[in-house]
Length: 405
Image 1 (cartoon, rainbow, N blue to C red):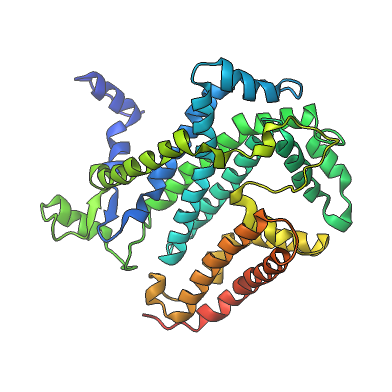
Image 2 (image 1 turned 180 degrees about the vertical axis):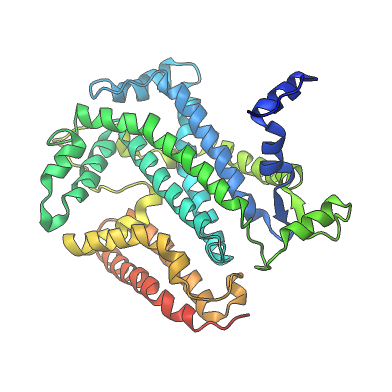
């Protein structure tokens, strides 16, 4: 048994039992961050703040939401939006945060790709981050079902139909997921449970894994420099703060995080009060009607790029392309054969072209996914989807020729 002494204070009593000082050192004052990083490294903290906003606003919405197909729509659009004081504010916060969180995730993700933050022992950081993207996507989709509006119903119908496997006709699997032949009460109840309990627990666990994965290799830096964190932290603790290449996470780097987060929150609440409409599809303000198909069914903007990879092809090829697009980012640490873990602009023209072409192409796919499937949009979407697949297949080839910088 551990040795306990007479506590000198409440803090000391708790510390002997929970080792709070050791935890604080591991997670904060003795967790070291490179100096040569920019504001893009603050996106992780911005994501945590956005997730907290989602949790808090979601709890308030949960107090009045009714997970019943006869009352769900009215509990959201009338009870919460009109009858409950400031219910509209919590819904706006939740809706805007659910959309903006994906913008921050994509910025965070492409920052990692640009600076090679998935290489040289950092594979688990990248893999846990991609699993978080999957979990957030599942959380967003399950939440989209809950208002039980027209687009909620038909999005649920279309997405669950994907599990039939095209020519495999796995209709039994689709019915098992829905709990019925079509989206109905069992479907809504299941996605309500997923949204408020199971997926948030998975997200919390993955956030813990993501932070734990950062502990050993530490975060990358703009130059891709291999830093001896033990030696540099000793310099810092010995008083040579200017000569050291690292700073403490708490409270040195966190103060920079908070400055970026403050700017972000101004932008966020501007959207909440003045431009919240982008996060709420107008079609979803009509009650769900299984007998009236919307003229154009499409997902939220953050899913449009992958939806457009599915749409131009026949059902079987489209499903294969869609599955490829969902899983290929997980393989990035193993597909990139370059010996360099540095910024794209220092790796040579091949990877720079690949990176910016990939980013531009995903923006094009997103734009085409929102438009009706007719020429010229369908043709542009088809070739953009082909380019996406070809780029990823070419990545191991073009990076294998890179010389060590």
